[in-house]
Image (cartoon, rainbow, N blue to C red; front, top):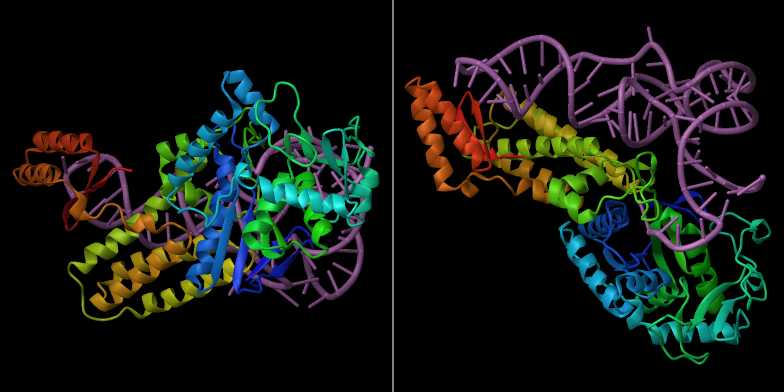
Length: 464
RNA sequence: GGCGACCUGGCGAAGUGGGAACGCAUCGGUCUGCAAAACCGACAUGAACCGGUUCGAUUCCGGUGGUCGCCUCCA
């Protein structure tokens, strides 16, 4: 598999770490409010990446941190009139709950800044010892000019950086804070060799990444808006402290757009993840993400969600068709369908291995879906082939975190009450009492099911 | 001002130096008491515009126009 790296601007081969595991670190949220659908993109992308690697027989370790110490948390807590630690804890729990709704499982580790204070302080001390950082007042700053490679990730030169914060205590406006001394109005702090305070914004990710994955690892990722300064600074901190490469591939997802602008808390054009999942369902949300490339900007709107929902429905219907056919399978094997399965697999893996090309992978799935439907136009395949095709389709869906599309809607899940209504409607139709039949159809709809009349009689499926 | 990205059918969205995937929508058809649903089929001789390289460019290079992102918090 190859992945595009922001550092080189090219696709780079994905190779495991020395221990054979593919270490992946993705920057998680700063917890001062509920996460929005844009925040969910990296969570989905990196969760599915890990899932794909594992389904392909590789070992992967995914780390997504939670930044629970930050200026914004102080501000938000003050506005709410509660202790900042209380707000951070509440928002952390909400973040876990909200992302759980996606049904993609949890990362292997989700470190909190507050749980890694010793690692952070040790790393800062290391940088100070190497003269890459200096204490000033109660603060500690990174000496940017002492790290010649600064700017390599974001492709800019320190000389071009003009709008920097002068900062009274800094030697150079370019320098950034590793440790911020306790200030008035801040209600949480930790002891350090430089006095009470808290970590700067970037140091925690350096510390947590190397704590969980070692000083060098395969993939470091996050939103593309983190390239500068966050990830640039992480490289400076980690490579400065260890003199060794930090992450080998820098993988950045593009932004979601709402009303033609980047979805952003500061602009206010956001849709909360929990609301979106509640309204459209986890599968629709995941399919929405998977149908676009992670490095493309992605518009968010109800129309986009409707599209994704319709696409999911198409896949669900194909699985249902397979299940229905399995109740009454045919004899022979359909050669065209068998060939389509092979083609779909090849196209799927080719797309995924080429910079995580989930849109191509989805296209391969849809091609398989069409091939399944076409096969049913021709006849009814054998039980063995039906099972093989189903296994294959569900297997591909599962690699994208979409196996849920194969689970819901089995006939066994239809309540007896609804089946009874359906039977009565069939009787009414047979008696040509269409008023009664239509009334029963409405009654079934009221139970959340949809009647589908077909050549082989009527069936009910959960309304979607 | 500096750095960078993007501009593909009605809406989204891929890949690609030589047939422009896929989804939605639309249209036609099958099915049907009706409706819906479902399924099948059709659907860009052309890829913002202008040049250049090439036997050949949507794909490479240059320019113009437009959109957006980063440079401050941001997934």
